[in-house]
Amino acid sequence: MRVLHALFVTLAVPAALSTASARPVTESDLRKHIEILASDDFEGRAPGTEGERKTLDYLRNAWSKAGVKPGAADGSWLQPIEFVKRGPKTADVQFYSRGEKIRVVGDELLLIGRESEYQREKLPAVFVGHGVNAAGEVNADVSGKLVFVLSDSAEFLPRELRQMRARREKLLKAGAEGVIAISGEQFNYPAYRRALMSRPIVWAEKDLAVGVEGVASPQYMVALVTAAGGDWDKMRAAAQAADYGGQTLQLSADLSVTSDVRRFTSSNIIGKLPGRKPSTGAIVFMGHWDHLGICRPEGEPDRICNGAVDNASGMAVITEVARRLARQRHDRDIYFIGTTAEESGLWGAYAFAANPVVPLDQIKAVFNIDTIAIAPRGSKVAIIGRGKTSFDPDIERVAQKLGRKIEPSTDANSFLQRQDGWALMQKGVASFMVGGSFADLGKLDAFLKGPYHGPEDEVTADLQLGGAAEDSDLHVALGQYFANARKFPPKKPEKGTGG
Image 1: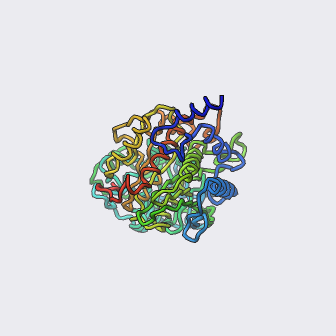
Image 2: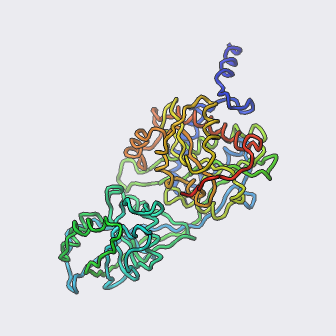
Image 3: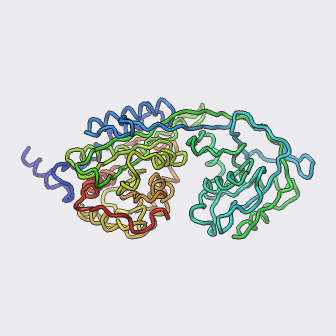
């Protein structure tokens, strides 16, 4: 029986895997990591918590046992990053129209101050539509004003400004005293409110917080604008024009806001497999270790957002990929990075891109691994980042040697800016997400509209790990290929990686 078993294992080894890392990654290999990282004991892995300490300790031990060495700049495992965390407490708001107090029927307005206490009187208000015009310029005078801006994107917006966060930053730099996002179809008020109530964090180096910010529902805007004698539906319709120039609301506001403000340190974890020819550059495997932590209020039956799929699954894959790649020497250095604060805006990835442990022009390729436990075995391989570099044929060649079929469309690129690789792509580094999870966007959408960012994203008996196991083998093969200076000689991406 032993002989037959050994023969079966040999025949089951994908052709592109070298004998040094021959045993394929199994579903049980991945599950054992996910069960720990997504357990209630880790409390949802929020940055700056005991859950972070347990997560980093677990990964440090697992990577060390796999043969990975510390890879941070000081010779340790950790890259510390300073953060600011803000959450709402109380808000007293009084609006005035033409100097007279008005009563707004509705309570779907949530505000957070930059500091623990914020007060202003007679703050003028302006509605700016989407905030910028087709040329990407702030479309109104917002200096010293309370700005109401639509959170939904629009077709005329430049690609880099379709996310609300990017437009918010433009408004802050233009001098806005306050920014209130108006929720919409892409991010409704309950979801927006939950995000703010979860006390999102900001990288201290990029802390461009205004005096006050928050979110209002469309229903609240109807009540507010109507009370001031306006027509919200007409205002919103006018804002869809590419040359919309904003509109003074004939409103001012007295605001008294108290907030929870905390400053703390969190860390990326960085490991390294030193190469035989470090002068030929490095490759990087990246994934975020963090999730949302305790994400429901007291009294809820399940308060922990465990993040099994997002992204304990990714860290499990990176750990097993590292274990197999460590069994042989490679030409290039191979880095493994677990980033912090991805859930709050890719902050750990941005901090790494700003302070890399290896010069960015020496990084030949980055493979980000996130939300990988979606697809079943036999799924096609999609590439987030397809068409952005000249590396697509190399990736496809590796996948096809494993018997994987390729998804040829660029549909998965709709997630380009929603994952850690984006922070490096903007610096000109070739970055990709490769695998089955983004080949069937229907299955992915079902997850995003279901367990995603909720307590339901936890380890269950039917957790889908078949595709994740196949994608793990694919990443082992990608590591072997791209870390080989002969198979993948030094070259620069021929296309723009940041678009």
